[in-house]
Amino acid sequence: MHVYTQDFERLLGRSIVSWIGTEMAAGQDDPIVWTNASCGFLQFYDLQLCFSDDSLEHWTARLDDDCNYYGLYLEESAMPLQLFEAEGADIFRARVAPGLPTGPIVHMKKHVDEYGQVVAVTLSTADRSVTLWCGHVTWEDGQFTIRRPEEFVLVEALGEARSGRSEQDMACNPQLRSSFNPPASPVPGACI
Image (tube, rainbow, N blue to C red; front, side):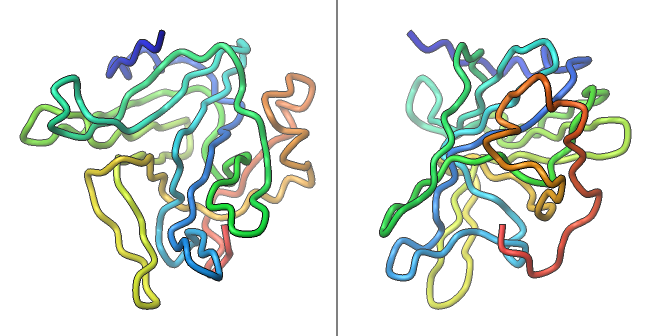
């Protein structure tokens, strides 16, 4: 049974080790188009935060219980997401989300729409912040189109991590936690 909550305050004080997500392509025709720095967002079907105490929080965007309005939700996770690459015409790939803040969460701000739904959450560590939105990015007529709120988790694109570690190594691996230091600034034009 899934228990979803909008109790984002429970994240305060917890230390982020890594972010893992099931990424969804923005363009689903041949060739597949993934979101990148020019879009401003990474798009995930779901996203998982891995913490220093080995706990996991699973982010999702979904309709409220009355199926009227989209919002962001958390679910405590028991198992880490499994990493996989997209092959051929696949529009999903699961990977470590690069360039996102790690360390203790010192500030959290919810952004609530006129219907009372949490449509965005900003998380801050000591030196960096990131905002997650519920939305949808598509690739239409050679450009990215962003709709909010919608059914996916959008994360501000901050650039590729350049830690020298493979994505599989960083998937909630306690022995590598201290070595993961994503860059503080975007890599313009980098394909993410």
